[in-house]
Amino acid sequence: MRPLALFTLASVLVVPVFAQKDKILEIQRDVALLQNEVRSMKSSMDEKFAALNVLVQQSLDTANKSNTSLAILDKTLGDRLKEQQTSLQAPVAGVNTKVDQMTTEFALMKESVSEVAELIKKLQTQLSDMNNAVRTLSAPPPAPAPVASSGPPAGMTSESLYTAALASRNGGQLDFAAKQLEDYLKFFPTESYAPNAQFNLGLVYMSLNRFDDAVKALDTVLEKYPDYPKVLDAQLEKGRALAKSGQRTASVNEFRNLIKKSPSSAQAVLAKDELKALGMPFTSAAPAPGRKKR
Image (cartoon, rainbow, N blue to C red; front, side, top):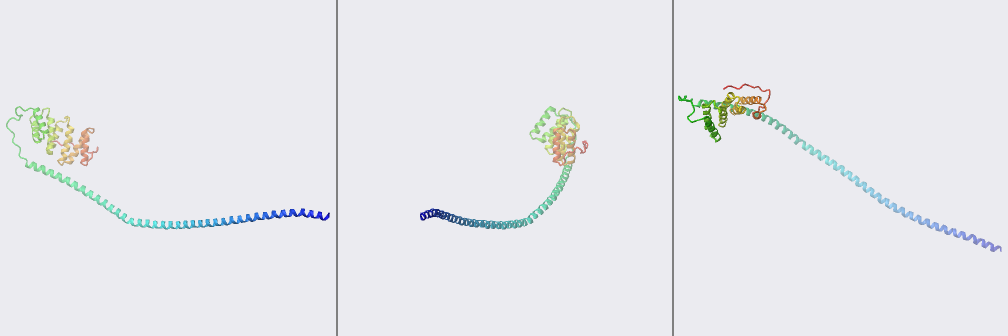
């Protein structure tokens, strides 16, 4: 009995011991597998970190090379810009100097041209005076007054003579028109067409370039017919005739007197244009000399 009991007890104790050993072995195998996986993961991570480190180093090297290249390029461009700026400064300074010289020379030339223009005007005035003097000296002496009656020829009327004179003027027969108007004023000085004849005679003289005669004819309109509707036109044409005859100062005064007499008229506007062309714009403070009597 006793040995059997001991065997039974030993059997009971041995079974749990073998079970525990199997379990420990299983755990050890799992641990070994886990260690292998850890080692494999560590190795893979080390390889990846090494590769990443290489890539980072390459990026740093590339960035450093780029920075170096940019620095060299910046320095090169800066040096070139400085060289170009230095090379351009001298030509630009030379151009500025030339422009200043040309400006000064142009101003001097302008003054010289103004002086020459004034001299030409003086010479023109002198030539006009000389021409008038030669014309006066070369003019034949006036014919003796006829003994016969100074009346108009038979059959001539003021209307027919005035109409014929206008027709001659419109037809371009200026010399004949002047003679007909002179005859009208000679034969019919008090008729109704006398102011018109006197005014048109001045215009015909202007067309014939007989500017001194035109001044006299138009001045007669202003003095003898102050209420004539075309008195402002006569004064305007007189100013133009004075200017063309070389009497610049008298012409300027005539235009200014017209403007003062009738500042809002159309003739005043034309007179201002004439003054502007003469280089003497109208000013309200200008003197108003009296008209010379003829």
